[in-house]
Image (cartoon, rainbow, N blue to C red; front, side):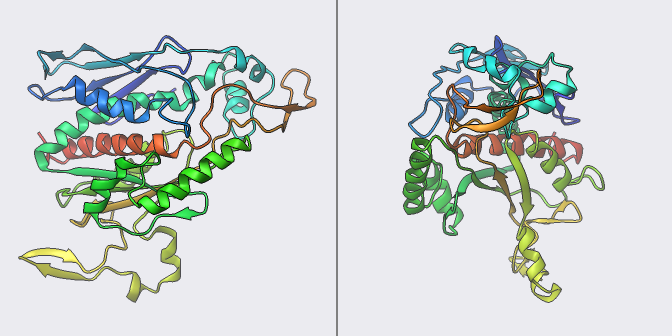
Length: 359
């Protein structure tokens, strides 16, 4: 089992959804860095459950505790351990999935991989609750990135078939936290919220797309070939549950363009080399080219729904009908926005250290 990401700035996650706690150990953080517990708590609150009628009604305070690596609010250079205790746990509704795996979830493959000894409570290590670790580590990573004025902005751009319009960075920065779905397009956000409530009433779920921008990254970020910027971001992004796809720049739309249209032509602006377009999403050859990093991730509809679904009894190998009970998100996208930002910060902090851009 691999719970570690990074080489120079390295994070190791621990815990289970219905275990005693969820946490992260951060290695490689320089001494003397401000470690603001209030700022960590603020970010953690963005993904905690029970925020609104659009999310699971599990009630967790998610109070962050710093166990090591900090003295008087400043990092000491020692490994940092951050954790949150689980409080509002009800595993009774999950007893059934020990033998009846949920369609779309990890229950069935986890049962066979771990020979029936997997933690089935709340999904165990496969639960989105473990992304708490990424958010806590992301706050530390963002503090490191501030030295280079690097900013990361993610927002929801699609829920179901409802899409947000393209927006300038200033509007995204100003509006994305004003809506429950974390979409800066206020008109689209209202429609997204209505759709989520509609599918919730139906006992169903819906997915969406998150777009992430990274600004002011120094040219040259990335360690080709196997540790390229795209490689490292993709690996980290896919460690977030429910993500099923990623694309950079124009992504799959590139297939519709000839090279003459897809290529980003170079130009000069105040003696700085830029590109006239940004179809490549700021990355060429796995290295950052100076334009904003742009990528999008697809988050599938939440697997746990209350509608009856066909499954196979793992004990008897017979067909059965499963109606999942418990507290689940009708749409996980809005809570995943701070997670995408955080894991991106972790990757950039690590690559920045590897390339000598950050010390």
